[in-house]
Image (cartoon, rainbow, N blue to C red):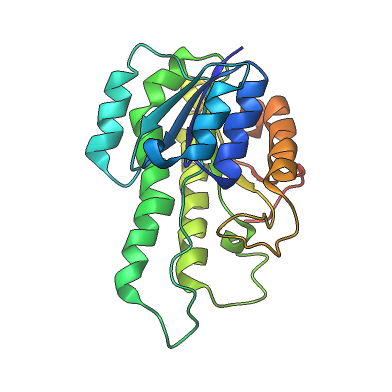
Length: 230
């Protein structure tokens, strides 16, 4: 099987991606800020079919990302999954915490771009050559009928713009880039009242990923394969 690098792999959607790929025999590079404290990830590493390697990584730290890229310089990566992200303060109009806007952009926009730039040669050496970015329907301009969530919405809209440009700039290298709305998922961010469990979300996204080709680069998918409007 191939190899996949996943950010934010210690819980929620990222953990489920890691477990799913490992169960299918993939070599999983599971990245998170504190692997030593990721109990569920440790347990999963001991009981899966594929090889799982954990890496200490803060995606907002450029030096850490560059260091990991150098450490894996000889490792082809078939799929890069930019999953790590934050929601930020849940404030409405008139309550904006401007000091928190940049940290959210750093995690949700700059980090996926940094990962793409640092790992582009690894992806070129892989077979699948695919960058998967976990976005959100809340970043859709066409489907924003609720307002609010200015910081989170704008960060995901910016990520979508990054994905679209990556799909154009990396096409000559044969690398595809797509964005996903994973659904309203029962995670720390989505809450326990969310509509679907991580396993359902990832199962749907895995099915889409399995069928994606370079012709699909630049698309914004729902977890069930439907196209989400920009």
